Image (cartoon, rainbow, N blue to C red; front, side, top):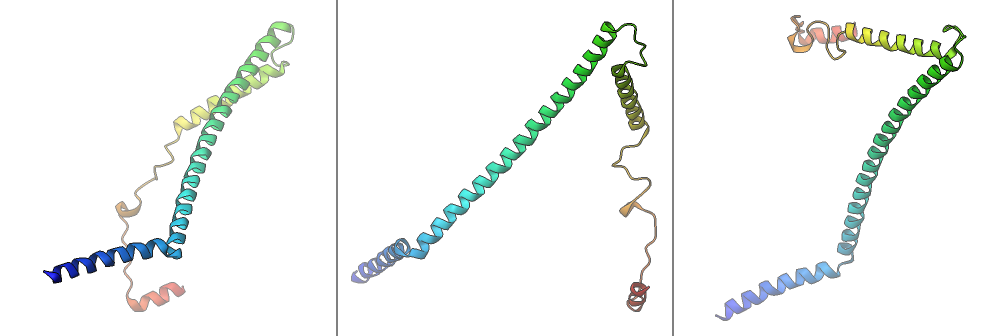
Length: 148
């Protein structure tokens, strides 16, 4: 029975000794501080990435609305210039020219995009599905093939 008490006392003393040495060691405290700083830096980096993504999304929305407003303004100027200056021929009105050019360019771009195949498709078979036989080189042919 005294051996059991001695064994339990030894185990409890070892556990307490490890805990006390961990808490009083300056390197352990330094490691905990560095780990805390690392976690904080990671959090700040993720926050900055999210803020940047939000910024670009908001900027894209603003540019889109700016483009729409610019188009509305140009259409308004075209309408009012034709209403206020009815005697000017359509070819002399600078706003009509721009609207006609813009309409034609948009229509031609739409026609071209409808005629072309999607850009993610390759013409013909590529890679593993290609029916081309590969040349098998022997070890002495490798040196001469790389040299030429």
